[in-house]
Length: 162
Image (cartoon, rainbow, N blue to C red; front, side, top):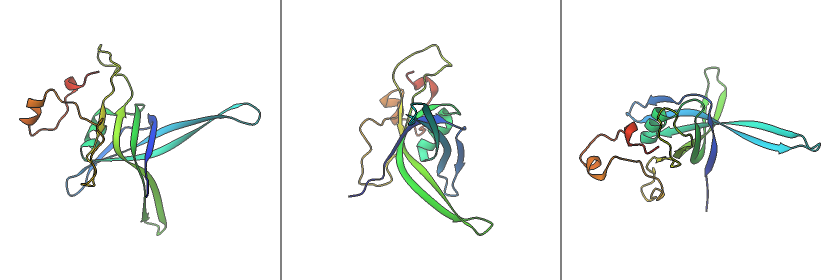
């Protein structure tokens, strides 16, 4: 049995960068900073920041681009993946990324007067047809009927309950 699972909670260090593949697939990349705090041998508090590269695909990429910005606090769940390529200088380069399967926005919105402790949970469909998405991963919609009658998957800001 194998397991490749990454879960982080941190803040975006830059706005998501959105691209589209030649096949028309949306992809977003961004970086999330996490902090590790400990006490050294002298009892002094130490802190170290880690920076994690995150890549989201398809609908999750569109949602990340639309709703996240530099400084946003998020929970990211996914798998680790290392890519390699040869640079223009002929040197082989490596990049380890978290390929996001799930994202939860942890910030409260500051633009409206509404307040709620509910967080939205966005996920992208699993790439493996035999795997079912977790039960708690749903994209909010205005109502069941309007979602079925619309070919548009766009999430409108007024449909978000916080």
